[in-house]
Structures are given as C-alpha cells and as structure tokens.
Length: 141
Image 1 (cartoon, rainbow, N blue to C red):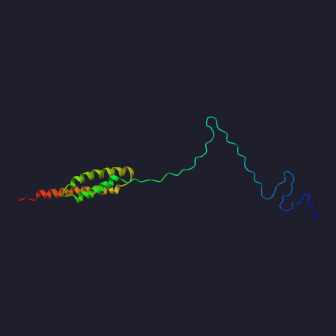
Image 2: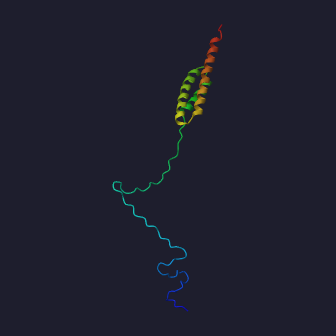
C-alpha cells in the first residue's frame, strides 16, 4: 500500500505527473488569457466613449394626401351638379387635383387619387360645357 500523505510519483487519478523543467507536456495545453494593455487616453481626445445603446425609430406615420382626396370629392359633386354649377366646382377641383398631384410627387402618397380627381373634374367641366351648348342651341319659341 502507498502512503496517503505522500504524493503519487506516477501521477495518480486526476493529477498530472510531475515533469522536470523544460520537458514536453502531453495532453491538453493549459490556456492562458491574453494580456491586453489598458487603454490610455490619448492627449487631447479625452477618455474613450462608451457606445450608445440602439434606440429603434418610432412608428412611421404616412399622412394622407388631403388635396387628392378633396379633388375626388369635388369631382363627384361636380358631375352630380353639372347642369347647375358643376363647371365652377370642376374648375376648383381641377386646381386642387393638380396641387394634390404635385404633393404626391414630393411625398409619394395619393398619386392615384389625384389623377382620378383630375379626370373626374375634367369630366364635370366637359359635361357642364355640353349642357351649356345644348341649352343655348335649342331654339325657344
């Protein structure tokens, strides 16, 4: 039996055997953490800044093109009232539709509504002109 208070010369269970200085070691190499030099502030630049946490942007709010919507509404009203004063409403709606088209070119919102409003208002103006021509061409007796 061996003495439990004496180190095992053969390396025993869980222990690495004692090797003389400079002898090659077999098995898993011992990992040593690399030594990093401390960051020193550079003259004139101050201490290194901590990175700022990422803050996601807020929700994207798409504003409707109200001029394009108003142009569509004025176009419908102009067509419905073309026999009375639809030509005047059509001209106003045409101007609002052109303004809505310019705004949609800048923002990218409401182009279809602006074009639809322009078409409806032109149709209202043409219908009013047609009613006026018909009214003036019919002889009164």
